[in-house]
Image (cartoon, rainbow, N blue to C red; front, side, top):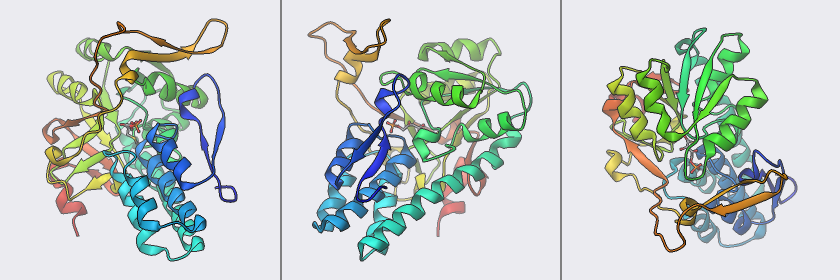
Amino acid sequence: MEGRDVVAINQPLLPHRFSLLRLRNHRETARAIRTMVVRGAGTIGATAAYGLAQAYSEGVDIDRAYRTLLETRPTAADLKHALDRVRRRATSVKEALAEAEAIADEYVERAKQIAKIGLPLITSGTRVLTHCNAGWLALVDWGSAPAPIYLAHRRGRKVFVWVDETRPRNQGANLTSWEFLQEGVPHKIIADNAGGFYMKRGEVDLCIVGADRIAANGDVANKIGTYQKAVVARENGIPFYVAAPSSTIDLTCRSGDDIPIEERDEDEVHFVSGVTTGSKLARVRVTPRRAAAGNPAFDVTPARYITGIITERGIVEPGQIRRRFGK
Ligand code: MRU
């Protein structure tokens, strides 16, 4: 936060442009979350917390601002978790800001723990498949799914990553690949349809994905397409891990059936964005003009397909979530 402004990376411009956006009040912050200028479970939570701190400084009705921010993204559990913390603990601008900062710092600390706890899963030569972007951009810093990969790479282990492109918004192709290039992690972007091919050929040793909400029975909501990868991983005997901080666990959802799944604008399917050969940003339609499209942003992977959930408190079997994280 700078003064009263939340300063965020404008993620839809990546990997072609790096630019920062100043969000001047809680409404602008809410819009940035809704339009996915700011995205990724933990980053959404931290940004919303700062957004609520802005509301305190604007002197507006806090309950209303809370609702405005909460309604931006229905699936991400971290959004409510962060907003509830600020509203419960803060009675002043100063306290709200301090709580938002504590939340952002906690994401970084928890992600570092996830990196350490997940590290033994990766030895030299391990080929990992990941879906979507659960890296620095999605979790303030380090990330969840890529955190053990980053640490393994920094420790000199030869790790290779298959990066799903993640249609419709291409967060794998645009964001995860960009992060891996910054870190020097060897990887290849693959079409979403190619994962099963490489798994069957014996070229994937391990899958690690992030999470947007984890139900009490260990079912996991994550970016659309995750479920298919988990089923194919099981078919091929490949361990399938989910990495997430405990703030992503929502014990009020008994199973994945209780997790609300966000349905986004169909234009995300109709259009793709990129740069032209002349380096101009462009958005082009790839579907027939009058075609209709469905666009669920997430799916639920049943607990039985998940080998373990890597949290800051250890690797937990999905069936043990309630016991380990219940009060
Ligand atoms: O819709 P997004 O981009 O906000 O979705 C979040 C994701 O990128 C993923 O589902 C991710 O694996 C979890 S974020 C730590």
